[in-house]
Length: 94
Length: 289
Image 1 (cartoon, each protein chain N blue to C red):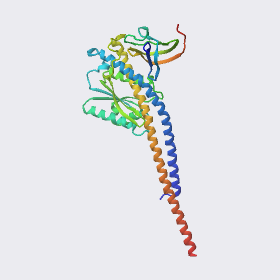
Image 2 (cartoon, rainbow over the protein chains, first blue to last red):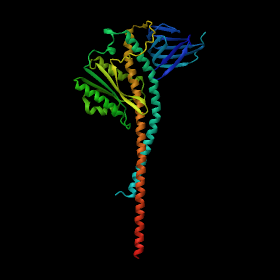
Image 3 (cartoon, rainbow over the protein chains, first blue to last red):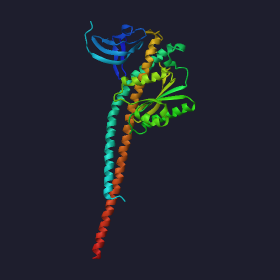
Image 4 (cartoon, rainbow over the protein chains, first blue to last red):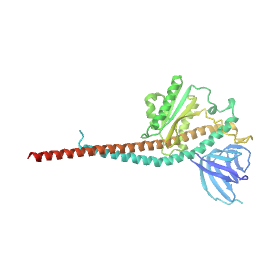
């Protein structure tokens, strides 16, 4: 699992997603950003938008509102005040 | 002397009570499961939040630290937030929280501090208003659904007290849900924010990049943290309440059972005594002829 990124998406109600994936794209308050494994430590507040979790050919999208993201050596943690899933396999990433 | 009919009625009424407590126990057990899940699901968020703030707090020290983190420097004005349940029939659950808060308040008053109180949950208000009616500034009743939207107005009320300079130190009293048989009344400092010094530095020594600046993030994070802390304490409280109610009702059901046994024994003795007396009267009457 060394070449995969650990992601956990947490809301006050429950942990929505936790696991190892290839890439996470999140809407930062100062612009959308993508995170791959071994990203430099980084923290930002989140704007309203879509968090995309990409693992192989599978893509999961969540609609999030309010919160922040914390990227560190362990992976990325997204703390969202409100989040809901768009539905799995929204599209295949080429 | 109670007649046989009176005793039959008494046994009947204890049986009816037992049915009610038994039903309440089962309802509480079902609700406990859900409340417990909610409390446990909320823990990762609160824990992550705390560790993120601890990380940030290390970087922002000294005079430019946000007031919510460092406090105002004064400890004269205290705001006590007492969080209890709305309903009773749960043993000493509400009383324990209120007692812990009352002890804290009287200690503060003895030191000549200024104390103001916000209550969450009707029972806490009822118990504290007798003694501190003039100090309660606001009271909230619990909602059916406990979520961030419910916790927000409470956090706003606390922040307003704080920003208007009527509170320097804010302490929250609630009951921590340890297990089904153990709920511990706890005091949690909300302002200044409690920073866990022992949180491991996850950055691995590398320098964090902040977007926007560290201060800006803390500014938005700290009020949010307040809301989340309140919500998590409400959820813990809720789980603790049902656990307390379940064991209280379990005790009540068992007591009712014992009472029914004792009463039934007494009833049977009396009935037999009566039959014996009747027999003696008949035999005595027959012999007299």
